[in-house]
Image (tube, rainbow, N blue to C red; front, side, top):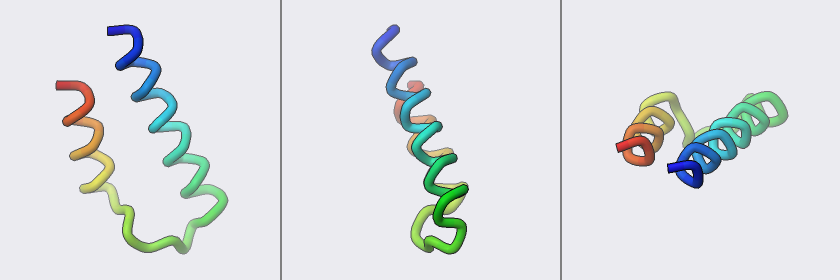
Length: 42
């Protein structure tokens, strides 16, 4: 359980950093992020 939470936090932080540093990157949209988040939290 704790490992999964850490994974979600790391993934979320990585996505936020990538969007801040590379705002023009294509290929990652909110749909992909939510799908990944839901698959991890299930």
